[in-house]
Image 1 (cartoon, rainbow, N blue to C red):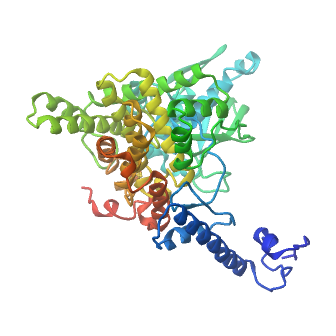
Image 2: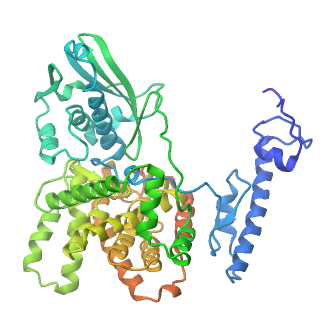
Length: 546
Ligand code: SF4
């Protein structure tokens, strides 16, 4: 390797950014690996100083900072800061810029990357096709979609082909009726007509091709979509399902965003606006959304109302359909039976309330397993929680404006967890999916029922706290066991957390939301990889399917 030609004048400043393995500019003869070690220790020192300051300011004399300091010592940044008044040590990343449409994504379950992403991709391709000039469309004889990498390797079990065909046929991921997706699955040889301007094409599931599983792909989840005239490709585009339902394509540019009116990275910064400056949470989040997304208020409310309708439709469908869920587990659905039995139950008030909320969670979790349309909140596996909370708030006749505010509060909790920890089971276990979903649900209930910011924050903290350490170990790799029942529990725990937070003195809660999010990040980092969506540990290896 060539020596660095850039002189580094100051070890304290320059070596922080040095990436050379052999550079000896610093004069110490240390390699980058050693250098990193030194930097970590330096970062560790800064961390300890900052943390001590935070403890001092917070009036706390506990000295057990080592695990948290260690958690940040592996970062490259030299700048550690103390968040709010707590002893949490964090590395600033800049303000949260996530917007609602990135967070609440609508599309078919059970996998945001293997079904929702592909359907969003083919629907995007369909929208491009209908804008092509007539003379180009006139020549078309067929359409083909090629699935590569992981989409090809595991797409069959997930239903990637039918989700892809539905989008290609012009079905919007947010509005596709469940019957249409079921029809595609039940009739694999059926031909569907697609009219593109002057041309009508016949498409079947065979037009979705499970192609190479291994290769030098730009992304592990790569797809190509082609409009053909015989063997000639009239129009084609390569796409990537990059996770969480997000999609990109060859030449994709990250859309520019505005800056938030009220920048924050942590709950304690957010609380300052709400408590010190007395800005209502709904107003603050809406104004940030307007500033970052560049959208109008009407568009934002319409989007949230659509999210609510998709969720309610999913719960109501799930409460009426009874079936064995797809896949090798042969899991019998429960939601409809739970709902039916509610009419003649002797469980008393508490039993009835819990059964009702749990049945809503089951209903949407089962819809996800059926591959029907869901909303990520925050993920597909945890998609039953917020719909269950929403349905129970609707049962209470909560006004639509309060429900919208509830959605905003829930999103804010999700943003904080995404920014400061993770939302991915593969990275943090189920605490990051169902734990965050339950925390969002607790905040949504508190906000929609008119509680102040401290109760909203405490409710979210409580729900998350009691999911810390929860592993991701789906049986047979299907988002069914334990995922569906976990959605039911997540919704019930959201209500429990709200009930506790709204009854206690909010000032007396000893654990704040930032602390618990930080604990989740730490737990995620230390969790054995067997428990991170690999199906190599826990329930996944203990349950015997026969
Ligand atoms: S167990 Fe894993 S796949 Fe299932 S909901 Fe939890 S994180 Fe998602």
